[in-house]
Image (cartoon, rainbow, N blue to C red; front, top):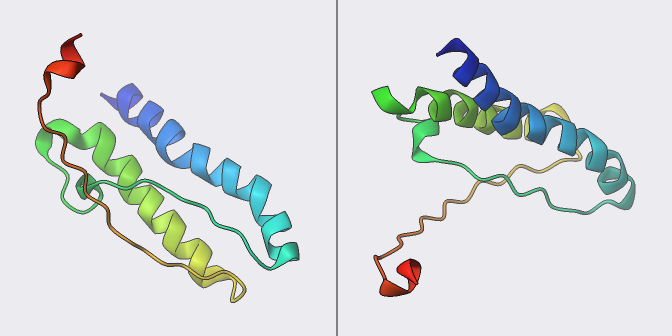
Length: 93
């Protein structure tokens, strides 16, 4: 379980941190830009079977908030988008 959690954290949170570190300097120099991060309900309410998703998503949410608060030049805005996919015969073709 520890390895699954670590792998999830590395891909789900550390990947975003590394990517943000690469693009933020240019964005700040230009005075504009957008970084989009996908969230999950699990970041707030992790279920017993979703620990490997809940922990990285919670860390990702905190990372996004900290970037917004650490530097006055960066604005943090959070929006929620819920997608509901209905079963379709096209998925089975």
